[in-house]
Image 1: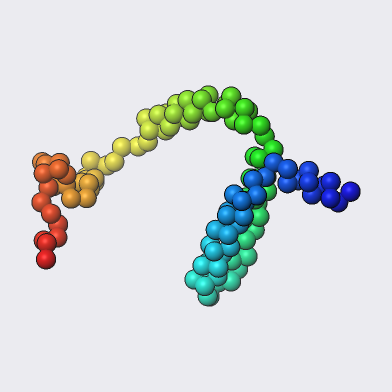
Image 2: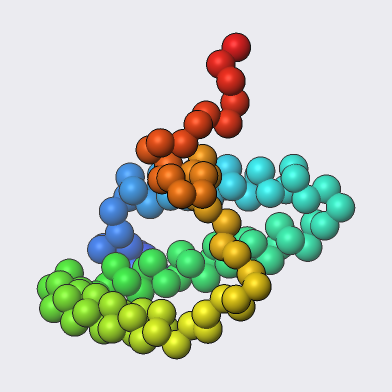
Length: 121
């Protein structure tokens, strides 16, 4: 009975890919553990996030790919429409606030004609 349950839970999971994802997650948690010397609670919170993400990945693995393909284009178009509306509603910068030029660009010229910031050694 337990064997059938385990088989049912793992039948649509790609084993090598799952092992690779778990390795990357363990490396990430180990890195966070070494960096969060003063805040060990962060590691526990991140581990909880990892478990939630793995559960959501399992749910997504149960959905047939045709379902994702059916809704991919409508979801993309809907997101583009929402994004355009957000861009139109965004408040303009105040007249007194200048936006910074792109890195390496100078006023009146584009980045292709900009002088180098650092001189070669």
